[in-house]
Image (cartoon, helix red, strand yellow):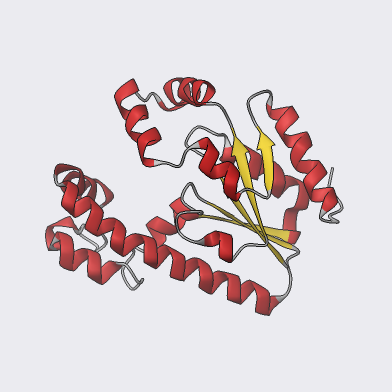
Length: 205
């Protein structure tokens, strides 16, 4: 099983391209989305639950005893220090969960490729774990337009996102494969198909 990291800035179109990969490889691949794992590790019984409740207080819990996403967001966005402390809990918990899944999939031996997607793969040290790092490259101009139109973000929010993420040069320095997604989805998908074929994958129609 080869392990592939997929990264790129917000608005790069990673989700749509991962859907294409899933359709092409079907049951021969699995895609782990770090954002989704971030929600999993906050659940009761998971690694991040007790430390987050201790940090944020029991008033972030809902009637079922789970961490309420809205209440948590209110607290951490009102206090930048809390936001940083929350990230210091969630990021290691996400990394531990993902590493556990990698070990399980390797032991199971059913997959040819396992993809991990996150904007922070490089910062979290995944270059030392994955076999290849794929960078979905899109210009800042195109990303801004997508974030405005598809997510409804204003310029201030977009500026904040861009400031918190790696530059294009930094992404490029760590990339084994670059997928240009400035044009059509079809063009980017064709580039991905070529990479999958290079890896020896037969593509489903």
